[in-house]
Length: 379
Image (cartoon, rainbow, N blue to C red; front, top):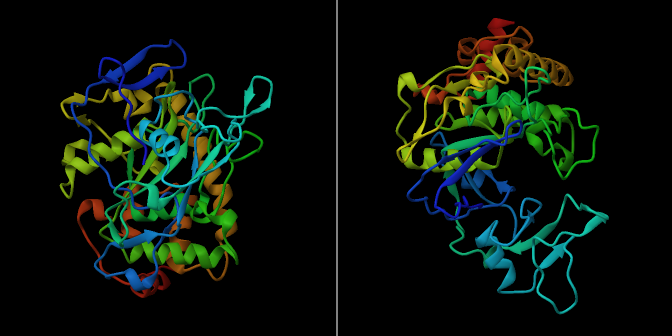
């Protein structure tokens, strides 16, 4: 897992404006300690499930394929630097500039051409060399979906309208996994630069078979785990603010501290763009208040309602285009209801009517068959 890096004076850089270079900081006296379970490939085999409303996972890999493009210099990730400079066993480095017999440094990326570093440097780290790694199945309380977001302004609107993090109803969580935007500035992908889709669950490029069985499997998995809270979290940019991966790291710190405690009723509200689920009205982390402009992007004067709504329209059209490929005869009827709702610009309440939302603590232990029966009535 990645650590939050402090500035020399102990503060944490929240973001830097791409237009004015203004910087915003917060103060966090103490960070949480985390024990890693997996990198980005987890295994949720039926044999490890307890059928208690939560998904249980275990690591699917013996080693982690870690991208280090964000590590530009010494000190950017002290934990990973320590594990790779003094490894317990030989490591495999890819696209790292080094010499035989020398110590490979993960910030020395090879050059694709003079002055242009390779965007996809990697190191393969055996999980046995990771301190305090967890070797047993664990329950998942929160499933987050990350999206790389570009800069957004009212003059040049984009889908970079996602706040620090959003809470998603289960139906919307499923839709986000169907379209799985590749996102902005993804070093693993060479594309047009426009918003593109990776497809079901974001693992589609590595999957076999057809899309619809995977879409049905994901929907059933979501319905079978109603005690899971789903979140949407951006990285790279929030509006005009460059934030890197701070939203994911700060969300982790905040939700870990809350445990099972629910958010206050006045702390969240339906997002102006329904595809973003619920937005936060306020957030305080260890006494530091997160400025509203990072929670509701339309509060940034460089964007306003005009830029936000234009970005929301880009997002809506993307969803409607990508979801067409899932409207097949073998898609579960519940899935068709959800996609039809999206095509009709549904509200948050309408999505919650299809699948109840655990964030409202209205757990429903219905099976997929129960939802299918109500869907047939709907059809």
